[in-house]
Image (cartoon, rainbow, N blue to C red; front, side):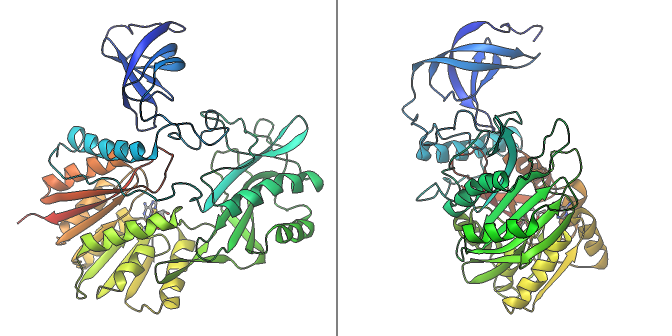
Length: 456
Ligand code: SAH
């Protein structure tokens, strides 16, 4: 396209056709796509063009002429400012349908596998109160300490009373923390001047145990008023079992620094998934929606089709949750994961749950898998659960080289999943079916499990 058919600040009437992966509405002007937050497919609206690039532009919703039947009133007061959720204005039923459609779309457009069955998204009965972990920046407004989420596409903190997708226990604690810092004169960190003390508060709650971990991230090596802070945090909620001080002195968007000290209680909190108990450290990944995790892992197990005799690899294993799930039905499970503390947790978790048929390794999965391949390890089943960027080619090559009968791919990003499924298909592995599981209701994130088998 030579030139955008619209100009900045122009007002135009559009009809929304689709949603982006970020949950924004997509409308087209002479084939030129405009991305407009809060527009829903089928809706007609007046929009203002706010930015144009060569092949696409951005707009702002000004007036809705025709509302979608799938539009609903967001229950959260700050939904239209906050960057946390993207889809509260869409009925939950429709959110689930859109997520299924987005997986189908990438299977057609990216994987070139249009015929793979993509099942209806498994949703939640109550798609609220589910998040077991919250990371909240601390800031100041009008001389007062505030805690809240960042505004969409910015680092302005929105003062927040409560968050309807959070575990209510997390919500309450975060709310009290702003008062605590105020009372103890602990200065919030200022990103612009790189001054101040407290940067973030992270709270994690065990869904089944209610055990809580509170992590205080500071810009300083020392945590001021440590004893008073501990005493007051424990007074807010007796379920707090672990208080961690994390130091992050860098100018960075990464929330936690590498150094953590337990200043009160245990290094970990415990949670349960089905019959298994897991200890979770401050630096370890743990699924944020435990109820849906049970459904996700049940599908993973189903697609793994274990009879008890298999050797299994669980790549990107975190604290060994999937590994231990599968170990109950397999001969041997090998797990690999990059975060050392997660592997320490995984080993403890295996012992704690009396599962002796597991081995866990710290390392980059894309390096350890080729090494295992070279050592002659030939698993029957491989499970991968990579971060958003998907699997490295080295890992995919090693996986194919080990010739497992089946691969189960747990993904939090349909686009990279589709890219990897195409590579696997060309290398002799057929994608059988995909099951989206809604781990992040009200947000645009999509989780799925895929069954892949060796072609005969
Ligand atoms: N399967 C686990 C964790 C999935 S999240 C669960 O269900 O809880 C993805 C995990 O991959 C995280 O624990 C992250 O630390 C880890 N990771 C990220 N990059 C990695 C890499 N290159 N090699 C191995 N692990 C990696």
